Image 1 (tube, one colour):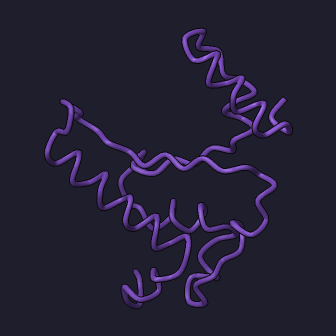
Image 2 (tube, rainbow, N blue to C red; image 1 turned 90 degrees about the vertical axis):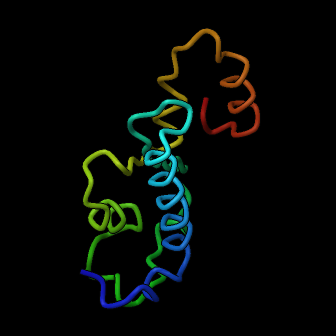
Length: 111
């Protein structure tokens, strides 16, 4: 249980909250015929700044912001987080090959 909504007014928790609300509304409206709308967070493992927990009262809830958010979101599968490296290194869809190559050119550490 959160001590108050203001503990979420720190990045990246504010963005997670905003995006999670949007996903919930999209699911309720059955946007594009969707039965389930989940928030998928993708970030590079080397982004050390992102791993910092900026909300003082949330620090004891997990090791990273994604750990904390996963704990706060009660609905199973409503929040998913994947490392950029894991996503693009195992990307197999032929129709997305141009996108994969663009990402690998832009972020050479994905190769």
